[in-house]
Length: 187
Image 1 (tube, one colour):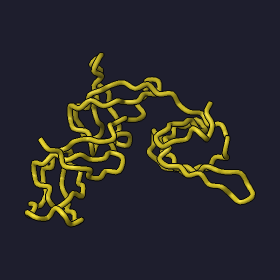
Image 2: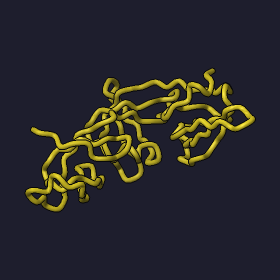
Image 3: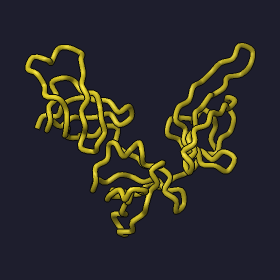
């Protein structure tokens, strides 16, 4: 058992028999009462987002997960298919679990899949990934100083705002936590 002081984004807890992932939290101090922690939680199985408030110091049931490196193979329309690198077992993962990470993971890349028992419950991807720009408006020489941006489609199909000097074929680093452009990668 952990307490509310251990709450952090991405932590998975068991609350009333449901597995919930903490999306965001905020400590709130009330004038005459004790401190409270407001949280937004996403149900792992259904994808539903709920709000919950914990009293400071309250015990919470954290879930211990096992991380297994798996290779993302393909999307079959309904599920994302992953293969265990050691046993070559293939498991389907629902769109609800993988939808956010799908913007940043290419086919045949290795990621850590988190399991609760035999059930896949989450994906762990690196904080930054390097992706190739496959479609954007052409850059204009001299547009490197202004703060203007344009849309660019990455090789995973994700659309992101990039500076005007980024061209088709450029590799860029993307922050997977915010989905924002970080920098252009020189090759």
